[in-house]
Amino acid sequence: MENPKVDKMIIFHFANSQPIGMEIQKDVSTATIGRVSIDILGKSSHWGDTDKGINAISVSGKIINIIDEMNRNLSDKSPFILGIGMIKGGVKNNIMAEKVRLEGTLRAIDDNTFKYLIN
Image (tube, rainbow, N blue to C red; front, side):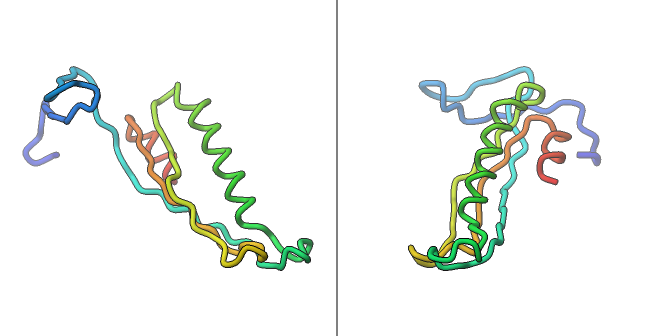
């Protein structure tokens, strides 16, 4: 918001925590929001030949655990939340998944934190 230059801004935001109406805060009250997609490429194999494959579902589980750890341990420095809401992967119950897509959201109060996490 450069033209015209803005000195102050008032934002009204629906407040889920209030019984009715709106709330007003003096400081930051909203976050930068972005969508996150992570594609994991493994190697498909029959479960009878596990040594020939790379299980994309297992890898996605490890990534989700790392994200959960980040949310617990790093958000004290600059508040953010990175959440995975959808997992898509696999083609059959007896075949190791070759591809998995994780989709979620990233919300950060600070723009620098948002840019750092999104990259």
